[in-house]
Length: 235
Image (cartoon, rainbow, N blue to C red; front, side, top):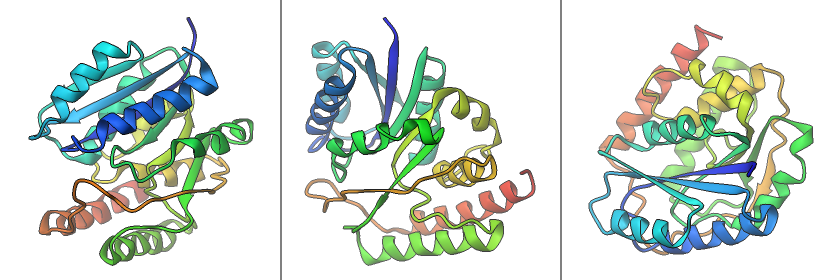
């Protein structure tokens, strides 16, 4: 059976959200594709019950593929998910997160415009995150414009639809172990003359789990700046 779309979802300590997220996305992708979809959830060494819950969900849903790994961080986890997805016989790859802040029903907004670009971004029209994360996002957008002359409304948004062959071709251009590979991919897609479209999608407040601004995140932002400099020298 042909697979029309593979959804990539990284997960870390999301036992309060993961069952609902998998259910919502299974229902939406099933509505659009019937049985011709797969969901890959990469459990990034969760310390709570996320891994066990995913194993149980995978037994119930044959279209859910669960991949467990030792903790490597969000960026590497996303890249690992992409590598698994592009190795499959599918037309498209979609990526979102497991924090239940995005609405699966918005997927059709991107899918309906798939013939217009091989790389389509959603953007959080109203963003329900901490002020610190919003500031960091705006700083990232400024750096992308400063270094590359590209205006991307939400360069790191975890709501993106990509042609599988295009993604497979550009993945090697992302710096190794990039902290925020999605920012790099947005830049590369723009350089490859793909219209990013910037389709508004809903963004909810996090109701379970935690989104923490820590020293590690600040260090990650510095790493991301270095990644952008490396990318600037290669494209």
